[in-house]
Length: 384
Image: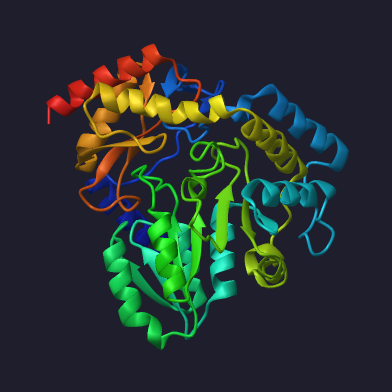
C-alpha cells in the first residue's frame, strides 16, 4: 500500500476539480472519418486531427492489413536489433523524396522524435531557441538535452533576432525550434525569416510540421510555402493528415545516420509496427497524387472563419478562445447537445485564461454542417 502517495494524488485531483482542469477519458468510437459515438450517441466531430479522413480510407486500411499479414502485428524488437522490417526502409526513402531531403528516420511517435533528436544534436554548452508556443515535446527534448533554453515570443522574429544577437556568441552550437503549424492556434511560423536568422547566426533550424504535412503547401507541409527557407531538421507525424501513427525526421544523410545510432528514443524503442508503416505508405501516395484533396481542409476552415467574420484561417485549425475553463466546458456541452463534438482545451495545454474550443476541419466536412456549426458557435460567442 502507498497510502501517502494515494493521498497526495487525491489532493492534487481535488485541486484540479475545483479549477475545472481535471481531465478524464471518454470512450469514443470513431464511426468513420467524421462521425464518432460517445455514450451511445453519434456526434459530428470537429476535434480530430484526421484532416484528410485517411484513417478510414479503404486503400489505407487495406495497406495496413496487408502489412500485418506479411510481417506480423509488431516489429518484435528495436530497429537496431531485429525490428527493421522492410517497410520501414521503403517508408524512409519515400519520405526523403517527398520532402526533398537526403534521408529520413522513422520514429514511434512525434513525442519520441523530438525528445530524441534534440538531445542528439545539442547538449551542455549549446543553446535551444524555442518559440514559446512550441509543442510540449519540443520543450521536453530541449530540457533533456542539457542545453541552455532561450524562449522567444510567439512568431516574433524581432524578439528571436535580439536573443540570437545577445546569446549566440556564448554558445557552441545553437538550434532554433518551432512548429510549422501551431497545434492550438492554427497559425504558421514565418519560416523564411526564421531561416534567414538561423543562417545569419550559424544556427540549425528544427521545424515540427505535424499539423502541416498533407494540408498546407499542396500537401508537402509548411516549408513548401517558403521555398527559400533552409530546414535542417524537418520533423512530422503520421498521426494527423496521414491518418495513422508514427513520426519521422527528414535531414541530411549524416544527420539521419547520427540519429539512428545515438537518438535514445530510436535506439531503445521497438520499431514502428508494420501496419502503421504500410498505412503511411498508402496515405503518402494519396497525398502526393490528389492536390484537390489536400486543399480542402483549409478551404473548409476558411468557410467557417468567414461565416463568423474571423480572420482567414491559415490551416485547418481554428481556435475559439473563450477564456475560462468552466465557460469553455459549458460551450462544449452546448454544442454536444446540438450534435457537434468540439472538445474543450484547457490549461496547461494552453496558457492560463486561454481555454478554447479547438476546431479542426477535414476534407470530408459538409459545407452545410460547417454553416450550422458557425451559427451555433456564433450564438455562444454572443453570450460572452
